[in-house]
Image (tube, rainbow, N blue to C red; front, top):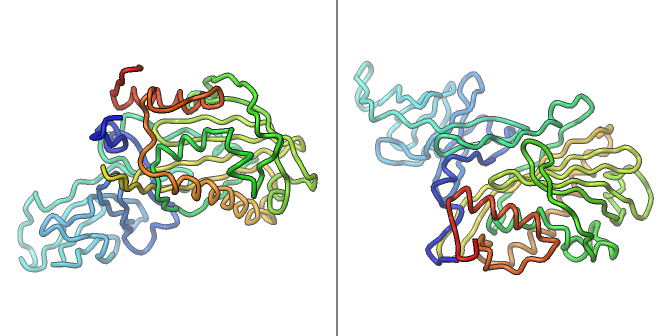
Length: 342
């Protein structure tokens, strides 16, 4: 891959939505986030509506996220300039009450939405939608949110991992990995629905500890019919059907926070679960189990430096890597990148 190419910093991603916080994390105080090396601030106005702007006061570029909220307006900690939920500067204390406010004092408001208990930010004008998850509207489904994490690895490596079947028996030996998962049966890529592209398969997994809460059975091993697919740029949905009728949808999404030519990578990560059973008694155990699984992936990926190349000639792919190869193909198309093997 070209040494000057930072994949996640390409201009095309200005038109994409990224999950940067959970709804629960944006409350009474402003929240600082960094997306693709750019700092932003999130806050809620008096009505609870979200606002997102660059984390930089228009006056002397102070970090607005260090300021305070007063009746839904954000006051800069440096000179007290105050901004409402539309990003308009409504007060410059040093100029006195009633003084005119120059138009250049106002902030540029960034597109921001709440969906699935997550805060989604778009740096520019959106051209791709937030991934559509029909399970959110299903009457028999209960949603379980988890906190936003920061992983010291590239979002490109994270999605490659989420689409991968071949690592189950090795990376996840401490949770659900089974000897039966070493060989990956051939599968066919398909358009799962209007949003996700991926594959369907069956897998036999170890069912121990908190995994029993997720499967709803005490058996030592359980067979799961699964479908896994990606949505651009960095989201993956896996739907799991257990033989006892339990259905779980796992939505994982990564958002690039920091990326440098020297190989320093940080990304936001979170997952959301939907279940069709009663999670009142088992919800915490289910989330704890999925967090253990995520920790196994995190430890593996953080030991690998730099971005995952998207060049066809840069990786050795085998049949179990078909989903990742297709996702990287679409990612190349999104950013308008071609290599010698394309």
